[in-house]
Image (cartoon, rainbow, N blue to C red):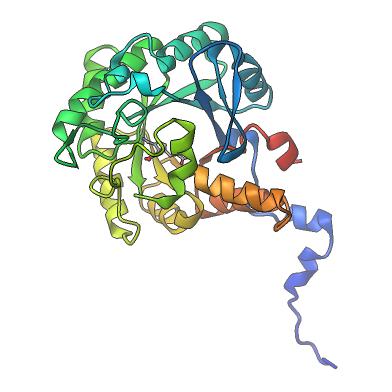
Amino acid sequence: MITGKYPSLRLRRSRKNDWSRRLVEENNLSSNDFILPIFLIDGNNKKIPIKSMPDVYRYTIDKIRPVIDKAINNGLPMIALFPYSSKTKKNLLGTEALNEDNLVCKAIQVIKKKYKNEIGIMCDVALDPYTSHGHDGLLSDNYVLNDETIEVLVSQSLLQAQMGCDVLAPSDMMDGRIGHIRKSLDKNGYQMTQLLSYAVKYASNFYGPFRDAIGSKGLLKGNKKNYQMDFRNKNESLREVALDIKEGADMVMVKPGMPYLDIIKLVKENFKIPVMAYQVSGEYSLLSNGINKGIVDKNVILESLIAFKRSGANAIVSYYADKLDKILK
Ligand code: PBG
């Protein structure tokens, strides 16, 4: 039996009732905190399930309207477009990236025409959906060439900006691409197109389902370790972000998400720049499969998303972003 005045401070007092827990909550989520990835596929009238990602689909352009209507109604600030390219459109150089009639270019135009600035559009800048070897850049002797790749990325960026893309998101991890892309955008009158740099992107095993979603699964020769970061490293993330800020990045991404909360916190505390976290495909599918099999409760989703906010992320790219009505309520 505890007697006397200890403990005079009882932290459990504020946890006792729901109203009180709500009163002292330190972090919360709103629809403003989410970016919704959308996978596109050629053709008409199709919504194709992706095997390795429960409840995620590839849409033909004529079928994306309800998805975007819902995103806008739910108050999401931005969508991110990713193309699934058929094998016939892939080659060694990824030239489809520069085709002004490619899937992403067509989608940007359709969406911009209909929705104007009701929602932001973000596009990946990288070649991996379009290369026959699945790498993000030009390959020579199993090495991804840096400066040669940047030249293509600069053209890809400019093309996407011309189509109306609001936020270009280079996800390739080449050295110096932010500076080159920024300069070319400015020179060509796209001073207001934003750059969200995937500044800290790790060579991760959590990307598997995404590669299935964009049709590069099984194609990838080797791995991406000679350009994406080593997951043993932390200090290096600060150097990556410092360079990208100097080169003109408006926002930075840390990717993957949940296994890298320490990096999100580190970047936020050091640079005070908007930091986006990417809850990647592998994280999504592991959680969703666990829920679907009854191994964990569906509240793991909310818990995982709040963790991003707690660590300092401004927003989260998440495949749950179109399911928030169920998650946040
Ligand atoms: C490629 C790219 C990847 C993702 C986004 N852009 C995969 C990769 O680098 O292999 C992964 C997203 C996810 O797993 O959800 N430029």
